[in-house]
Image (cartoon, rainbow, N blue to C red; front, side, top):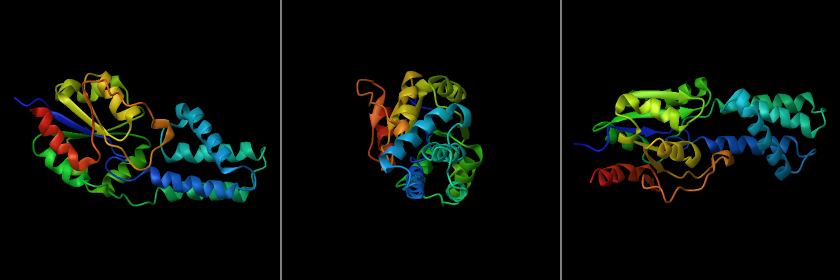
Length: 232
């Protein structure tokens, strides 16, 4: 009898590039406000705004854009030029136009594992943007289920994997220790960390090295082999 019924995949920066586009937009934001704030100071102020606004706007492009506008108003003492605000809005819209570039091993790994297991996409963020990227990725038809959630928690993993035998019979692979790995382990599932080149500070967390159900691979090309090894 197979040890696992289902494999869960994160989307952004696990299956396709995402954070690098935000970082490039942030660099553009720093250039726009170079006369008002040092880049490092501006980055800290923007991150603080994002933290404050998560509960209001959630994850994704809309919240990021509104946080940039809020930060611009703050660092200019309410005197941000209309032209700067316009450029920020343009930068936010541009984030919606980036192509969905698959990461190494994404398509092959999802396809291979889908031949043996149920595969589920679990992502968080703006519904419109996540649906757009999934459609562009060409991977949509491979998944048995797609879940776009406001936050990834042990409870949400328990709910999502319940129809597939529960988290204990599931593996969740993703680039965020905070969202993809630790809460999955807390739900009694297996969490596989797939590091990405670009990382958002708010997703940082210590590796749960002592957890028996924690594994780390360098990229998705190693996931099928890891699953086979865990099956024993």
